[in-house]
Amino acid sequence: MGRYGLATMAAVLALVSPTMDALAQVAPIVLTQPAPRAVVAAPVPARAAAAAAPVVDRTAYRIAPGDELAISFPYNAELDHAGPVGPDGRIAIPLVGNVPVGGRTIDEVAALISADLRRQGVVEDARPTVAVRQYGGVVYVGGEVRQPGPVKLTATMDPMQAVIGAGGLLDTARTRKVVVIHRNPDGSIAQRQVDLKAYTKSGIATGIDLQSQDIVFVPRSSIAEANLWIDQHINKLLPFSRSLNYNLGGGAVFGR
Image (tube, rainbow, N blue to C red; front, top):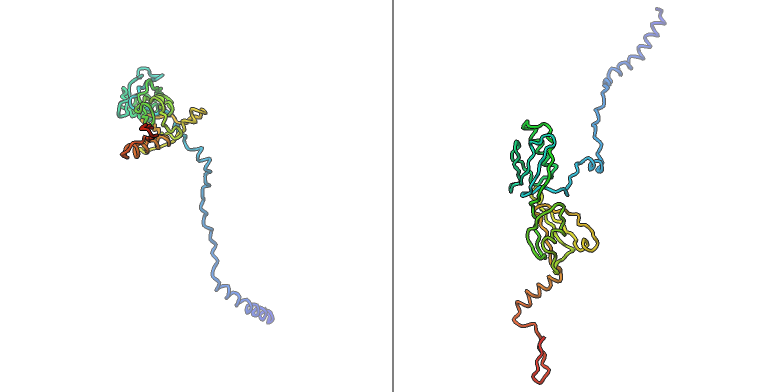
């Protein structure tokens, strides 16, 4: 290599050397993968959630103590049974035992009996049919009715039918605000108000099928309450008569 070649190489090295030193001092670049994004489930629309929820038929009759049930098995007739529901809400069924049926619908009782027979190894798929041969439940009707007290419950009995079973309404009844009280299976109390006047005048149904042990209370009308207040606070408390006497002279006295 000639003298000029060595000089050129030295000049190039002199220019490159500072750049290489600067690159050596730069921190290495580390490539990292971005953190995975959390996947959030899309919210279910309220309408779709309501459609997916099981529908509970609150108007279906629920078996009560005193009801007489008939249970038949289409494929196992030897298991057919009929009997009353005891005060504890149970019915004794051969090969099954005491089954708690109080407060359940007939479909729920059929499913319960079928599950018990399957669990005990008697019948794998019994598919029983349950029917109420005689209703033993009662509802209690009180307030402004002619014969307050228990009324025997029938299928799909509504508040007006219960009132008729208690002898009908008194003249002092407030028919627009009859109260129906029901005890739920969890012990809570549900209360609804029905308009029997609209029922009798326009045929507008109350939309309530009574259940065993329900209470139907007919309150007094406002006029009856006022008359009662007058009787209690005026007639019976004040020591004078409400009659008025007029003396027209000549000794003649007229009372009213």
